Structure formats: structure tokens, C-alpha cells
Amino acid sequence: MRFIEDLAFDFRQGILRRGTLLLVPAVIAAVTFFDFYAKARRYLEQGMTQSTVDYGDYWFFLYGGMCEYIPSPDNPFQFPAVWILVFLVLPFVLLNYPFRDMYGVGQQILVCSGRRSLWWLSKCCWNFCGTVLYHLIIQAAGLVLSLVFEVEISNRIHMDFINLVFNIRYQEVWNPSSLPVAALLLPMLVSAAINMLQMTMSLFIRPMFGFFAVAVLLLASAYLLSPLLIGNYAMAFRYDWMLKAGVSMEAGMRIAAILLFLAVLSGLVRFRLYDILESE
Image (cartoon, rainbow, N blue to C red; front, side, top):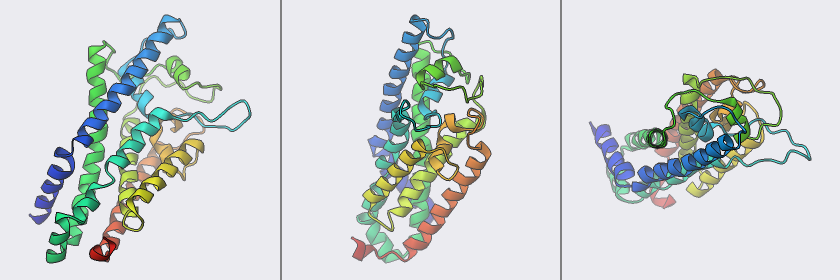
């Protein structure tokens, strides 16, 4: 019962009363959708692509990331701005609430009751649910805008349009026609694992340094295709379903779930020994 009360408090204070977590994804959806829609209209009007666009193309525009980067003088690194925006804004939004609560009202509760495990597990549930809500709001807002602008709602993708948008210079990709369920779920799970990792790291280093560490991890993942860099599993263009030398979606599911579990567990162990009064 105590845990339910803690979790309800975190939902009220950390989500419902913080308009940022509700407003930011809606703004991101609007900005990215209009960018996507403008590109689609321009390419269609200029005859650069013969296909229409569907909601699946917009989803790929958000979560595609970038194809494998191969350094060469005639191939400069193209910063995946949309993907970085989607995945790096959320850790920043989630950065402060747990520690503001710990040094505020939560400090008195923790010192008096000693319910550290329940407090930490409640924050982990808040973090996970906040991540899922963030991505669902982006996708729901994209669905609404697709309906308004008469973009067909389906999971189909059009590779001629996607190759133009992502400026693919070589043909090392498959030619899929629709998004599989695993591709739809994996970026969200990876995002949850990364955000949980940031919250756990913030128990060892300052929260802002934890955010910088996550930013470096995402940038390194964009620069280098490697199964050891978890950000690769959040880029649809890096999956073996799309890229011939891509990372395995099944392995990505397992790695993200393991990282999520280890972040929760290590954070729990660390927080039980955490000196709240001295760290403040």
C-alpha cells in the first residue's frame, strides 16, 4: 500500500503537475511532422519520388536515426538531428524531479521512515512510465496530424522517399515495405533503459554529468555502428531488418531489458547506502 501511495504521488508531482513532460513531446511531434510533411510535398511535386507517404514514413522519420556512417573525405558525418531531438530531450526533462523530491518533501519521509527501497522503486516506475508516455504522446500527436493532413494511417514505408530523406548514397539496405512490431517497440524500450541508466548514474555523479554521459553515448552510437553501443538499437535504420550489416532487433530487446534491470538493481543498492543529508 505504501508503494502505491508513493507511486501515485510521483505521478501527480512528476507527470501531471509538470506540464513539461506532456507539452514537450506534443511540440516535438508538431515540429517534426511539419518538417516531414514539407519534405514529402517537395519531393512529390518535383517528381523525385513516385510514391505517396504514410504514417509509417513519419514514424521512420522520427526513429530512423541514420544509416551506417563510413568516414571518408567525400562523406561528411551528417548529424541525425531529429533522432537526437527525440531521444535526448527526454533525459533532460526527467533529470531533476527525483533529486528535487529527495532533497525536498521526500527527504523528511526517507529520514523518518527509512523506506528507501520503496522510494527508489517508485521513482523507477515513474521514470519508465514517463518515458513510455513521452513516446506515446509523440506518436499520438503524429497520428492526429496525419489525419488532419490526410496522410494515410498505416505501417507501410516507402524506401524511395526514405532514401531521399536520409540521403542514402549506397545500396546496402534491404527493401522492406512495412514496419514490424519489434521495430515499433524497441526504440521505446531502449529509451527507457537509457533514461533509467541516467537516473542511476546520478546517484554516483552529479545529475548534469549523468545527462552529459547519456548525450555522449547517443552521439557515439550515431557515429559508430556497434552492437556494444545501445543507441544503435534505437535507430530503425541500423536494424538487420533494414541494413544488411545491421544490429539484431532480438539482441536489442534482450540487451535493453538487461540494462534496464541492472540500472534499477544497482541504483537500489547504491541508494540504500546513499547519504542524503551529506550529499545535499
